[in-house]
Image (cartoon, rainbow, N blue to C red; front, side):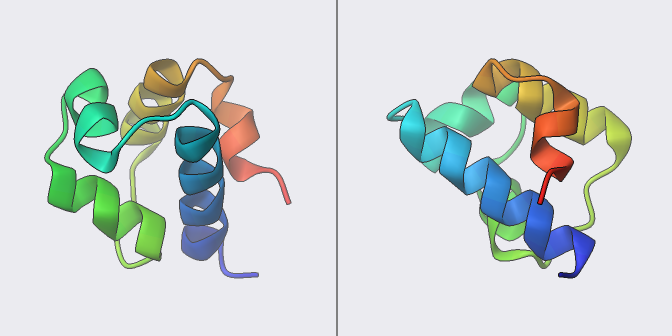
Length: 68
């Protein structure tokens, strides 16, 4: 699986498990909602800093966003 799609799938899974909208996650991670959408769709290439911000907002370790 391509890494961007993998990260996107995991971000979406954890976001939905927490009951957050993309907008709520974006606010918590200090990102724009369209950026979060792009990450989830696998069209954005998030940096390690962005992955860390998303993980913190989701309450998971950054490594969880990279797991198969």
